[in-house]
Image (tube, rainbow, N blue to C red; front, side, top):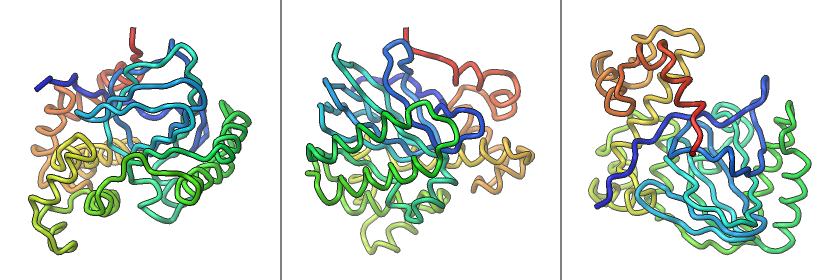
Length: 271
């Protein structure tokens, strides 16, 4: 099995003061494989693209919508010369408030849109691309995209209901155990792991680790000490948090967040 590159931590790019943003694809700003705490939508208007999603590869063509939940590693592997792609992201806390439904943002979608829905989304995305302070308009765009996918689109890949419920529960409570998930869904723990890995290309354990690390980073950015951030994120101890950071970033939390390593990862682009 091919060993994937370590995914970087790269927050979704936001203009100063913005909690939501729309961008258009530019080859020179292609990012390496990465993950972040913001849910993300991608709408392909022209051309085609190949995305790496965990250890899976997904081909996306004109007229299709692809979304990533927070913590999902992804990378644009290939874009056709005529690729026109809009990408939309929202801060996690803003997304939770704007959508009021974890399943609206904490999910993986791949949908073929109707021609009318595509035209509407293209116009909205074009109007909002690179605009600062358009948070509410982008939240409405997000709702339109999901509504279009649900009512007028045809699903190309439908994650199992167990995966969808697991994502929604983990989004609210990343420290939830697999046994607790199994009890809440009245299923076997191995079934949860099997469906989750098949659908997202990453193990449930690795995904939950990322969500906890994202919570630590968010709390640290808001002024919390690393110890309190680690405990609040569901780590049993700071040493457990330290080991997880080292496995993800090859550095402990203090070095990663205070030495400039984080900034170096966030600013990296593909050659």
